[in-house]
Amino acid sequence: MTDFSAFKIDVNLIGGEWRSPAADSAITVTNPASGEVLGTVPNFGSAETREAIDAAHAAFPDFAASDLNTRVGLLRKLHDALMDNQEALAALLTAEQGKPLAESRGEIAIGAAYVMWFAEEVRRTKGEIVPSPVNGRRLLVTHHPVGVVGAITPWNFPSSMLARKLGPALAVGCTTVVKPASLTPYSALAWGKLAEDVGYPAGVVNVVTGSARAIGGTIMEDSRVRKVTFTGSTEVGKELIRQSADTVKKVSMELGGNAPFIVFDDADLDRAVAGAMIAKYRNSGQTCVCANRIYVQSGIYDAFVKRLSEATDALKVGPGNEAGVEQGPLVDQGAFDKVKELVDDAMAHGATCTAGGGGHALGGTWFQPTVLTGVTTDMKIASEEIFGPVSAIFKFETEEEVVSAANDTDFGLAAYVYTTDLARAFRMNTGLQYGLIGINEGLITTVEAPFGGMKESGLGKEGGSQGIADYLDTKYVCIGGI
Ligand code: NAP
Image (cartoon, rainbow, N blue to C red; front, side):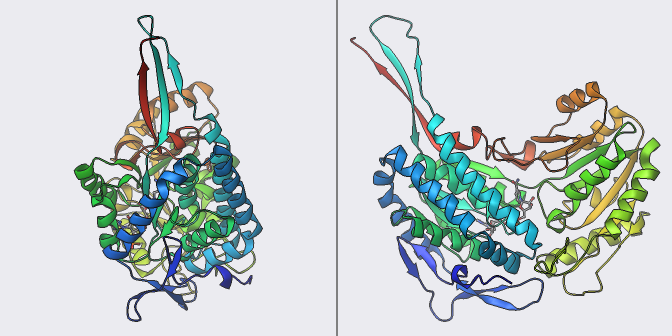
């Protein structure tokens, strides 16, 4: 196991200083695979958050005015620092989150790729010269960094979710106050160290751990914070949107999902099964874009269920740092209990289990990769985000029926469709009310494309050219008397 001690930082970064908590005020971080205590981080609150905002506010004018080349250079160094330390950062991520090491390596790599993407994309944040309706005037549109950005991140992708926020913020010249999830704070603190190591000025990146309500509340009420970018549950996202009203902040919200995964009779079966495996079981089912409701047309239903059940049974379950492991534990007991409740409810209402079905023999928070068939809309699993390794399969007959069922949710993040009918693929693009659609692909996230949901899955986009626009204010200037 790679030594990650250099990045397991148990203090917070505020205004360029590493700050310790009072002796009795700490959050314990646990390895979900072993139950072993990894360490503690500060349990800070409003006072320290205000200091972090003070520091970010003070650092903003100089950083915003720095040369574009300077900011691009820093991002390139940050990218290289991430990749040079990929093994240690991945080992730390697996230790605090539980995902297999191969997935952690991938998460560090895509985080670095986001940083590099925004280093490139910031050069293209062009303004406009708009034709004037009358002579003697020039009408210009220019873009400017919004100011201090508050970034609140979840535990399921503690490194790459931060990359999508720090990347564009630092590219355009914003300064930041980061609040990571309490279950997985070390990956974010490692970003603080890397930012300091590569030469970001004091106050540009601040990382505060502790009470979500106190830190979040302080960020939301402070009028100097001009934008808040949040990834997490829809419930908390709605609360933050409400809180943002008092100071009229910009908000970007990457919230929950309830992804339909639709397999038509004309699908390539091998491809559909491979796509379902990745869309369902990555990070043990704990991703916002995980296939939540698998709809299979009646003609291919039996073959698909058989193949998916065999592939699910074959998944290697174990500690994420063991070679070949494909499924780690769920992040904590609460996550395990929620998944078990959904499976038990489905079984009680008539679902059939064709793989797994409950807690794994390893004990702890390991859940068996599971397949449930005959799932119907009266089961809780049909409407709630599962966030666990459970494939819930519905049978359908017609295209109209499945589009209507797929859209019958308040969420609108990701959807997947398997079909070899080109016209149908285009109809799905139009008909499905989702921000991300994979057609014959189960893993579609890429730095070049805008990631984000519709309906109650969120506001704004991360990645692509759209992912930088939310960190910019637009000004129109009219120059007269020419
Ligand atoms: P969560 O409970 O909403 O927590 C997310 C973050 O918000 C954590 O840092 C948490 O801090 C903080 N938080 C909690 N209550 C808060 C409050 N009142 N004010 C301010 N901050 C608060 O979500 P989670 O369980 O960590 O993450 C899972 C959810 O995230 C799922 O619904 C998933 O779909 C969604 N997600 C969405 C995307 C996307 O791109 N759309 C990506 C990944 C995950 P503490 O940890 O200290 O409580």
